[in-house]
Amino acid sequence: MKSKNIIKENKLFARESSGLVREINWLTAMFISMGFIAFYVLPVSFLSGLYVSPNAIPVIAALLSWIVLLPHSFLWTRISATYQRTAADYVFASRTLHPAVGVGVGLVFGISQMIFDAAIVYDGVGQLQTGFAALGAKYGGVFTSIANFLSSPFEILIIGAIVFSIVIILNIFTAKYVNHIMGGVTIIALVSFIITGALMLTVNPSAISLSGYTYSQIVSEASKATPLFSNVGLATIGLMVFTASFLPFVNGATSVAGEVKGGSKAFNRGVLMALVVAGLLITFFIATSVGSLGKDFFIGAGVAGATNLLNPIYDVVLSVNNLPLDLFLVISSYFWYVAIMFAVALFVSRYFMAVSFDKALPTIVSYVSDRFHSPVVAHLIDEIITIFSLAMITITPLSSAFFYGMDTADAMALLFGFIIVVIASIVSVFRNDVRKLVGNQKLILSMSIIDLIVLSIYAYYWFGFSTTYLGITMNLETWLLIASPFIAGIVIYYIMRKYRSNKEGVDINLTFKEIPPE
Image (cartoon, one colour):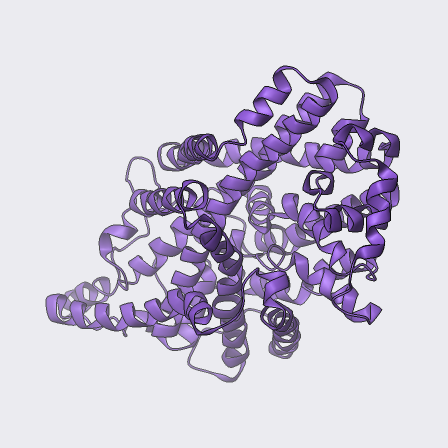
């Protein structure tokens, strides 16, 4: 009888073990989280948003952007420490709420971030193009030719596809070393980010004339900006919301929670500290940028459509008279995007693997190579869909419509991912039949309510002013687009439940009453 029970229990999951190895230390976990937050590219988004909220107070908005998310980060620290399994927040939500809802959350995180990754691959080549355009404006010659070459949609597709494929190959075949590789990429990205932020203080306004605009021309354009909100407080919050496509994504380390060693301390550093460090660096970068060129410069650049001038790398290269340093800054700024690609590749594969491990997707998706200890099939799914999405962006007639879809990718994750997990954290406090998050339950409830309020404010701005923040008009079609991964997850759960019951004699509803094996 005992052996039969063991066999039956094993059938609840795809395997008796995930096949992954706990070899990620707290520093690597923090790098993964910082990469997934994508804070490196946040200043460009923030500075681009100034012309929408010209009456905002930039440094206050930058500080608020991460301070208001400290309760959010605290919750994900607790989730990661309590459910130390792959895609821990998916595991938590699917065990606390209805399994179908949990599967929807898992697919939302996986699918939305493949779309986001395609945007990062695209924008990474765009960052190189912007940097070489600055070099071309300053030095001419071969740099201008390179900038023109990088402007071609086909070249963007080829370069982006090659780089992303290398990231996936490294994740599949060098899983033992990929954390070290990613660490090296992250260090280069961080050094470059800090140097660029510091050099923004030295930018000479007269150097802006190399761009074809004079500094005074750009500043004069600022008076033409029309505030979205007349109230300074609302405008400052509105500017802060431009960071909402990045900073709430604190679950980079959570996605690999089953591979992190060091217990709760590792997650305190890997999740909470990642947000604090990223937030401080963002605030520093924005403060130096606005302090050097002035708020009106970035407002005017936004009004004039001078997008290159909204990129600090472009401004710094125009001003710094040192070719080796210029080249380092341009090339190393591409590492901002490569660091994000590594983090997102880990993230996406883990969510598909986790859902499959619970048998809510075909078992083959959860396959982990015995030799390489990597989820091969999940990575290949990421590769195929991301490259397909990249092609949609670059060379098809659907490019503009799809690119707006990328803006909605983060809306998918906010509405049908993070908010639902926060609701699960509230529900868990009142349920005695689920594993509660480790810690004081009153504190967890308080942090959950605060987080829900903050995320709801983000949702209000995003969907209430969707043409500004998402680039789309909200209608039935766009609502269905945003909800589609979540709806698909619910439908897939019931299909797979019936299939597993008929073919294997296993009700996967029972799977979600257990915690997956390590």
